[in-house]
Length: 372
Image (tube, rainbow, N blue to C red; front, side, top):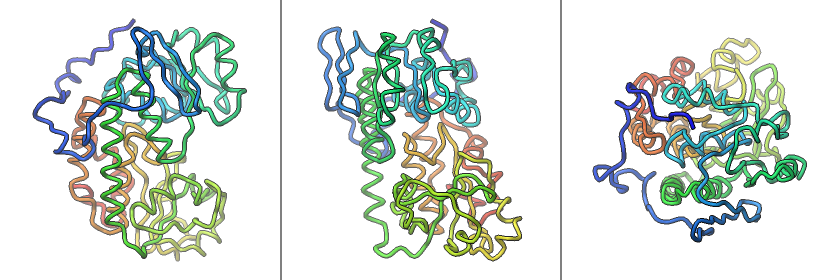
């Protein structure tokens, strides 16, 4: 096993949780308690995955291969460090390399990424070489991507994904697989505390309209009512312009974008589009969000903030600050506290600027002092 200790410069920034960080001081850390569902007996650990299959291990997993894209950073967060990750999807590595985790844990950039090909088809030979205790794989995309793993004698835990319930279930499952159920419960309980607070504050009749776009002006894909982005928009107290799209996403053209005329446009992290691309497009000059300079690149922290992850409560609060024009006061301090728990490293001011996409969003409305 390689040495997974952080380098000395990294260690100097670590802040270990102790008596000085009470759960009551931060909603994200509220309600620490044991996990639910599966149980371990002696040296044998039995976990029920999100498809209802029973997963048996000889003990807590110490080497994990993650094929779904969000799973790598979530595993790091639930574990409290990167040492457990033995392989991950190449798209997960791209987010890590571009974000906070790649900077503070450069060893993650050396984790093998050849574990899956197109459409999440597993590279069984590579996964076997990683010697994982368990492989995390999608459980809702057919047996063709799971059965080859089991046929090779690998232990597989399957995910369903896309809703808040799925997210909470995944966090708890990771906690059980790693023997970190208390940490997982703290993450989930913190999500629920923030969720309840935001639901109570959301207006009954939202005035602000928001459109989430994958890609850019040349190939735009809007997030419909079946997406997690729709859930986040409504939670933040706004209306999703694309709610009439029943599925998760649909391709739209400039004409449809102009017809919806959203107050706020969000540009996701699964495409290269930047606010300046829309501001500089003559075809979009009459778009309300362009005229009022309310186009924003979604942040990228430990992972992309677009899909459900351990950092979703931060995304909810970020968007609420944009929608209501409050600039999300205190968000930066909360990121520092939460990252101290999730990753064991507190981000610097420069790292906060990078994850909040200040270079991209600095020219947009209400963003100069965002989150302070």
